[in-house]
Length: 230
Image (cartoon, rainbow, N blue to C red; front, side, top):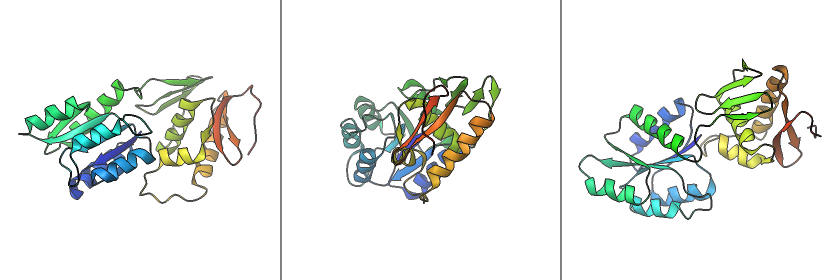
């Protein structure tokens, strides 16, 4: 799951980002409304945490603009001061899914993000292909009923492929979904990730495999299908 945190207070934004990364999210950060809108245009996020008091524009404007972004509306939790009743009401009326009061309790924020995700169209529904089953919330993977333990990034890769299967997932899209903008990504990072995941699926006896479409990307297909070798 990919998260955008928008807050002009650097230490708080960094604290929230570090916590959510430890919880398994890929996190991008923005300190202004303009940066947030640019990020929403460039990437698809599963949720956004939005401070209502930004230096260059009102949080309401960001909420309104997110609905018109090319990637579509993003579930949003607004951050607001305890005494800012009007701000809370305005945020909810503008389409926010929930709010958290400042000073922020990171555990509460995490719980509210997960609750919003469960209610959204990106909710935690088990994904399955062939004898492979994956539960996004827990990253629990089973093949023919046996658990397959995967590191975080490999599990995220599997989720992206499962959500699109059997359609092709463009390599650049995978890179965008699996890595934050601030992370340095080597040229062969995605290839290496696919290679490791492919070997593990094969060793575990999965009835699906990852096909490579040269120069474009990857797709998850049933073993009986015609395939392209990398």
